[in-house]
View 1: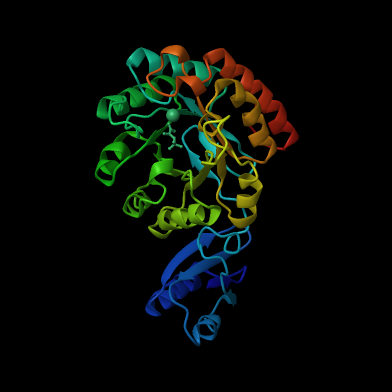
View 2 (view 1 turned 120 degrees about the vertical axis):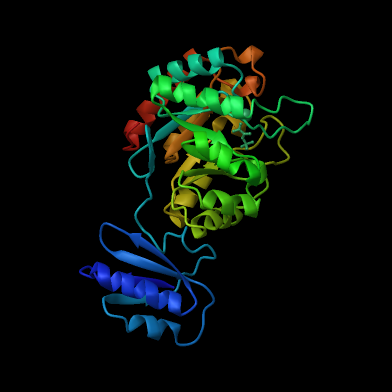
Length: 337
Ligand code: PEP
Ligand code: MN
């Protein structure tokens, strides 16, 4: 149920309704909008609930939420959510660009990349310290040493750091260093992990599982929101299909579709979505044209010798050119980059 408060409802009336919702055995999530405050009352429906809530003082109306995801739905919140942390702003009019290597490899690599992407206009630095690799024999990441290098790169450039957490037991460690915590595609339905990052203060970048539907993605986001973290960015990073000309198939219809269903910002990853450097610039521009609120791009100073995903990484010059192209499309889309 959505408890819509009157425009002039007082803080006291909102607090009272939160207590009322909780006393009915439901969970209350308050959303303060520009126009009005709404309280999401989450829990099993039962007879008389609507009438009971509607009689509260300061309440304008009580509506059911039809979507299976509740807090993530547009029905609950019509204004777009803007996720903001340090140098990064994603959502609404803001288009954030998260750029950096697939993996943090060494100090020189991450510092050079961070300075170069910053100079080209990136708003945040990405880099994996815990890497989910298909083979156990592939480079698994520098773990805490990698997190420390990311923190050093943040100190040197002022860029917010986006990095993946692979396992629930690593959440406290990653939280010590990260500005945004990434949940990788392989973990989209790791519900204990989603609950754990839902209790963190940092925003979460939630990547779509390669075989997950849009509804499954939104329900995964709902776990994080329901655990108390309102700052969730959804990421389309491509899905597994019969097609082999790209590493994954990047369905850009996800962007306007998600915007119609949720207030959460949508980020696109054309690096993993295509798996080929030469396809990335134009698919990045296409993502912006589709209305993306953010891009996440793999950039490496020497892609040929990267320890992971070099074949889909942009070098520094290619990244700068991609930024130029995307800026022109962003201007046409009314987005600030
Ligand atoms: C990554 O961002 O490097 C990554 C592993 O992405 P995904 O989880 O989308 O495969
Ligand atoms: Mn990668």
